Length: 274
Image (cartoon, rainbow, N blue to C red; front, side, top):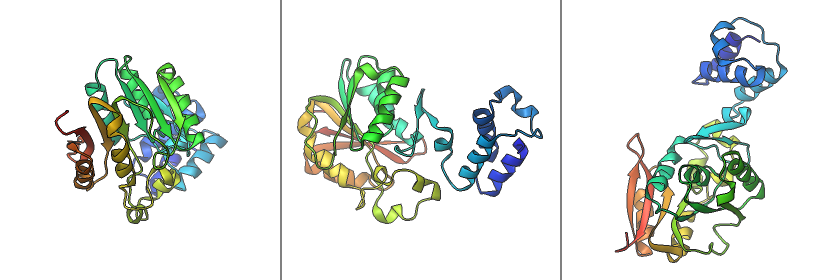
């Protein structure tokens, strides 16, 4: 297979960035240096690994799982089908934490997944520590490797726990961070095909998409230090619901928009203690 043939195959499968993905696949699976990519368009690459990667991508498997890693903030993360692929949307939450958690603070990361929230926050804030929780041991194994890979393993503790049913982490925390499963069950059924390669439990609560917000906001306000915050990533159209849930627990909410102007992060603080 040549680079041009690979690009054509990906394009025919409806892959939007066929040229970019083909170039990266050739680098990963054939050991071609980036500087040589423009020179090898018609060269037969003779790689079974590349053929396999192309077949997986044409079948709809996410590009990130095929190459096995992905960039988020300034770090690179191992990604496997045991974890949600880190997305730029979540960087808004991490940017808030980097900017706003007090010096020497302690944070929690609930539903940590790949560990990208905890790890990238700590990587930019060497004064912070974090307790990170996930329900699944295979997910925590990936997160732990990502912490070591990015040099923060000595400042993060990973714990196996079900956020919806288990007791809360012992505080107090300066901030509780979370990108929980927030896709409603009826919306999950209508997502693009690549999404279904990712762990369903990391995307949807199987209900209205608000279960984790209700649980965390009922348990964690008492585990915050004075002036602390519970900070969520939220889905499209969820801002009003999250604000209402927070209000029921004596918290006020500021909504932070992403770079496309969409509501993306909810910052919940105790009334009169922001």
